Image (tube, rainbow, N blue to C red; front, side, top):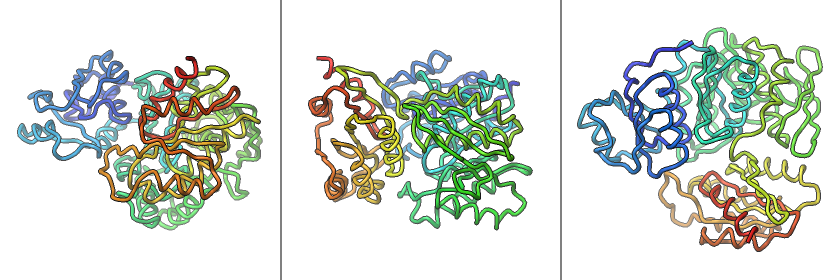
Length: 465
C-alpha cells in the first residue's frame, strides 16, 4: 500500500532535519518519493542515512539552503523564530508546517497507533514496530530513537498500520487522529509548557478526544496520573472503548507476575480469562509494563494476543534505552536516556535488579533548566540508587539559562539522600574521572537526554588504555 504524498509535501525542506522526530518524517517522505532537503546544526550518522535515501542535507543554517521551489518548510517547536531559513521562507511565501502536522498527514488513510505518556513512548513505539514487523504486517512507523542503526527510527511500510510516538511536550499530539491511542503515564513535566497537573490532564483528555469513532484508548491502571485521566476520559467520552493494563486487580489486562531473568524479564498476564507468558528482552518492571501496553494496543487492532506476545520477544531494545555500549577491563558501559526522576529511578532499579552485587556508577547530565528547576531535588534522590555518581552541568537544549538554576540543585539533594556524588563542570574531563572510579565488575551508566551519550565510547577508551 503506497499512500500518495500529502499536499505540499513533494519538495519539503526540514529545518533541523537530523533531529529524532524530524529525521523520521523526512525518511518516510523520501521513501514515498518526495524530493527531501533540509539543514542541521552539525553533521551526523543520521544525516548520512537520509542522504542514502536521496535527501539533500546542508550543515549549518543559512537562507541560501532553502530552495526557491520548496513546497513547504517543516519545523519543530525547537526552531527559533530568528532562524534564517524560516525568515527566507517568509520572504518567498513558502508555507511553514509544524512537524506534528507533517506526521499527521503521513497517517492519512492508514490505521494509526499513537503512543503517548510522560515516559516510555520510544520504547513502546519500538516494541510495536518490531513485533508487528516480525508478524509480517510491515507497518509504517516514526519513533523518537533508532532501533539498531542510524536512521532506523522510521519506515514506510506496505501494511495499513502506522505506529507513531505522540509527543505531549508542546501539545502537538493533539494533531493526530489515532484508531488506538496509548497513554503510558501522565506526570508533570515540560514545565515551559505546562504549569500544573491540571493542564497535563486537560491536554491528555484532548488527545483522547482525537481517537477515531470505534477506536480504543489503552491506558495504565497503576500510575496515579493515568488513573485520574481514565476517570476524566470516561466522564467526557462514555462511548469510548477504554482498555486498562497493569498490576492493579481492576486492570482489563492484568499483569500477574514479572520475573527478572538477568537482562531480560518473563511477564505473565491475564487477558480475556487466559494466562499468557512471554519474554521481554530488556530488564525491569518499567519495560515490562511498556510491553503489555504494546500487547494491548495490538490486540485492539485485532491481532491475536498469542502471536503478538511471541513477536514482542523479538524486541531487543532501542538505542539509548539501557543500551550496552561495550565492555573494557571488566567494566560494562550502558547508555540510558533517562532524564526525568521517574525514568531515572526505573532504569536504576532495573539495572540494580540485573546487576547482582556489581557496583553501579552513573555519569548524569541534567536536561533543561526548567526541568532541573522543578525536579532537581527528585533527580538527586534518584541518583541515591547508584553507588556513586558524577553530575555534569545542565544541557540547555532549546532553553536559555535560568539564574540560580544549576546542577548543584541535584548534587545537594543527592548528598542529602546519602549519595556519593561528584560535580564535574568540564565535560571533556568526565570520562577520565569516572573511568578512574571503576574496578572490574562495575556497571557505568551514561544517563541523560543530551550529548552525554557521546561519552560512553570515551569512557571505554580510557578503560582500555
